[in-house]
Image (tube, rainbow, N blue to C red; front, side, top):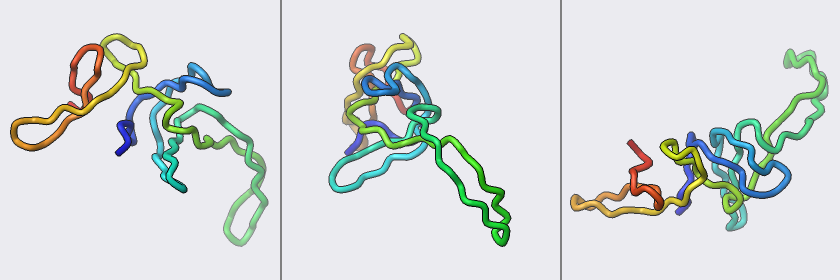
Length: 108
């Protein structure tokens, strides 16, 4: 189970988009590898072919590329630094994510 979910605010830890921050747009699992799309990180230019019947003008657009989940870390809002996340099991049988450095719950 991935500890990073959609709509989390993360920081890219390594690669061409290192130190860029953004919100997770999508979490994708392919061939046993989990990857994420981070808003505004690792952009690539995609050329779009015009299609008048579908009302597509064509041209170039920037799209986010997939980044391996091991290369991103969730940002702790209280310290404004990337942090590790673990699970805490509650007495009622549920579980919550929490930051390892401060012990604060991620899902509020």
